[in-house]
Length: 277
Image 1 (tube, rainbow, N blue to C red):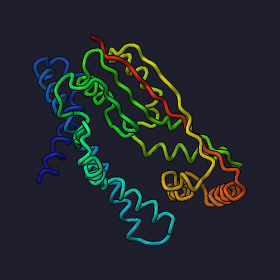
Image 2: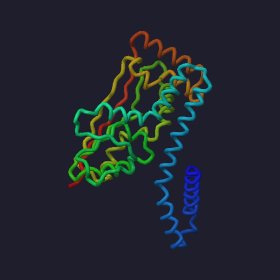
Image 3: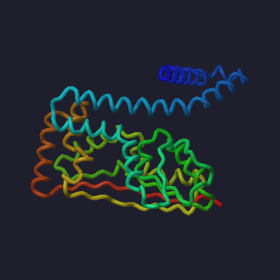
Image 4: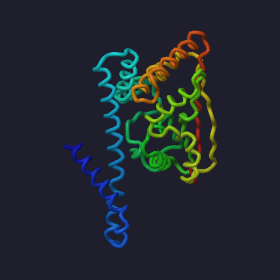
């Protein structure tokens, strides 16, 4: 089975990492060099296998909640997770359908951001929107985007900085714990404010960073994406907050929603740079 083969590669990579950490290996130069090469060659496969298992785990957890029944809001949250993870191909097909017959100079492709199916310098501009926060290896993805950008071309990446979430609440300490819990489920929650340094290290120039704060004062308009109430109950299940804290926090949130005083904001950083000629 392919899954078993990938697991064997991962286990072999872990074994090599342990051997390379042993100071005794440094006296065996040929063996050390061989192990380093084997370990480096396996990292790409191991990383992609980890991403694949992470998606499977999230789908499984969401489906388990759906199968158990119970809390309606948790059910909705789980269903949204399943829909998001399994609906990517549907989105691609819909984009193709909408553009069909319009003679637009565009085409749609689904691929691996770490290995884009395009030649070097294929594009004048490359843009990634709310993508890098979900990547296990953002450095590799950035290198790949730079590769397919022509010399002198522009690269733009926009992502939310999950360390900038603010919510007007009577319980700010509980709110901070809640947002930390939510950020813990994202591979790169702080990527937005790290991109400037990554652009510099990658050799891009003419780098500009623009902050964009997204403000919401109507909870219902963001509820399909934010799920604050459902998420707080999930945080309780993970021991992040107590039952009493959850009850107080949700009651307070429902009060500000009903009175029209709801306020939430998060800041995006849009980082742009140019590839050297």
